[in-house]
Amino acid sequence: MIGPSCIVMPAYRAGKVLAETVSRIPKDFGNEGGTLFIINDACPEDTGKVADAIAAGESWIRAIHHQNNLGYGGAQKTGLRAGMEAGCKGFAVVHADGQYAPERVLDLLRPILAGDADLVQGSRMLAGGAREGGMPLSRYLANRALTGLENLAFGTRLAEFHSGYMVYSRTLLERIPFESLQNNFNFDAEMILMGHLAGFPCLEIPIPTHYGEESSSLDPIPYGMNVLRMIMRHWGGHYRNLLREDEVDTAHPKGFVSSGKEVSR
Image 1 (cartoon, rainbow, N blue to C red):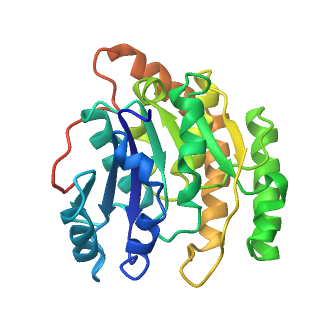
Image 2: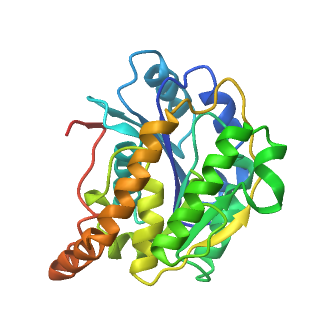
């Protein structure tokens, strides 16, 4: 039994592939109490209309629309808040473009729901999934180099820091002030680091991946620079300070604030 769990699906310029990606989510997820939150991040195209059409026919799907573009991390925050308010115990992040196999979401949620883990990452680097799925060699090498640098800086031993297939427990989200993290694509890596600092090790599960025309087109140079800034912030005590500040008000964690049909921040 899946119970109160959710999938958070940030969506931007995903109108052409959104319905197909949603159709690949196992039927058991919705049938057994799971909820899908599609977060339209103020897309100027038809992503919002497609999301509404999908949600209109399924009681387990909700479309949430940003009035302003908040970025990939900002979209995740909206979905995580919605899941917290709905009483969810497990939170999976699935990309709208289908790059990370939606079919595997239950495999990644199970350790969370069984109480065996609080932070799970679907890793493309384990079992050769990245190159088999068509990841360009340049991106593969950059991923490995950045992950090696992060492991050295943070004292971790992960195969990957840069997969977007993330799953969280409610316990972790109540402990980590995720609202204070970046709104860009570095949100995932910051969550892994914050989990590590808070005593929640990251469980990695091998996943297949698919690179096609619809896959992320993020600029690797600004992304890499943000990783370096994250390392510098860590060395400066920024992330540990966020955890200490959050301990001041444990009755109302920073990660749990209200959300609605439309979000403007």
